Structures are given as C-alpha cells and as structure tokens.
Length: 190
Image (tube, rainbow, N blue to C red; front, side, top):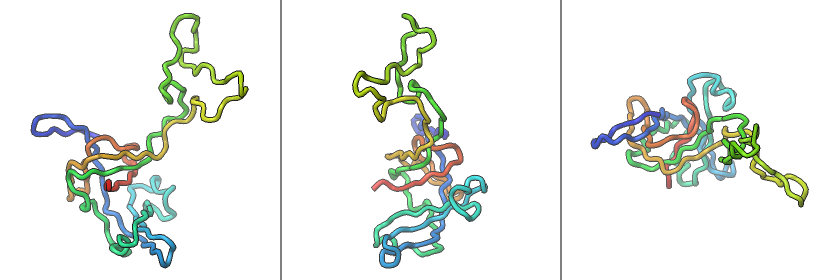
C-alpha cells in the first residue's frame, strides 16, 4: 500500500498490484467436461509460493467458471492481460487474509472486557460466563478465543485509479486482503 495525491492535494490510500499477464492453460467445455470454465496460470517469483498450488514449479493455476458464450472467446495459449480493465472501473478482489494466530475474545470478537477495579485482579480480558443453568453445556457457536485470520476474504467496490501497461501494474483505491507479495484474484463487478 501507498498513497497518491490528486489535483486538490487530497491524499488517497491505494494498493499497487502486479497484474499478469496470465496464460490460458485449459478451456473446459459443457459438451466435453460437463461445465464451462477457463483455467488460467500465473508465474510466481519463488518455488515456495507455488508449492501449495501446482505440481509444476513456480506456477499458480486457477479455474474460473464462465458461461458458454464467453468460454468460446478463449483458446489455450492466449494471454489475459489487465488491459481488459479500465480506469475508474469497479472491481472485487479476493485473497487470503493475514493469519493472526490464537487470539482472545477482546481482539477476536471485540469484547469490552471487565473493569480494572472492583475485585478484578487478573481477568480483565477474560470472556466471562459461557454457560447457562439449562441446557448445562456450552452452546455451539459461542464466541470464544481461537484462531483468527487466514481465511479467504473478498473486498467489493474497489476502484481502479491507474493502469501502467509497461510494468503490468494496477493502482487500486483502498486496501486489498492478504500479505505483501501475496496472490489475489481480480474480477470486474458486474
């Protein structure tokens, strides 16, 4: 993330994304495969990133479902570039959020905690009572401490502010999910 200034010297927070080019590695047809989709690959910088995604080194492969009319536009070997996007277009970006490990109820769920006085010595951030007289068990879904983050998140309504075709960069207004250098999926909002 960084920030840019407009003509009125107003600061706008932006995220710079290296976007593609992505290569079409397979086309799934309704007659042959029972569904219509396009399989896309993206080269990665290190093998460590690609270990979970593909048996081939340094390639991230993802399949996108599309309708039958759109799937006929693509052929194996075609390049999908960010030039399909336009400045000012609204997009939705999905990625894996940062993992935060095991967190207590104050950080994970926003509990206020107990007061610092009136008999509280070491339990200011404790969750409080979790049970009841009946049904005499902890009810499923109770908000408690646990593992936080590391899930798939989609942020909608982000605006493309700038496109740099020489360096394959998209400048998007706002924050996108994930760590610096992580993989994200960009789709136009329709």
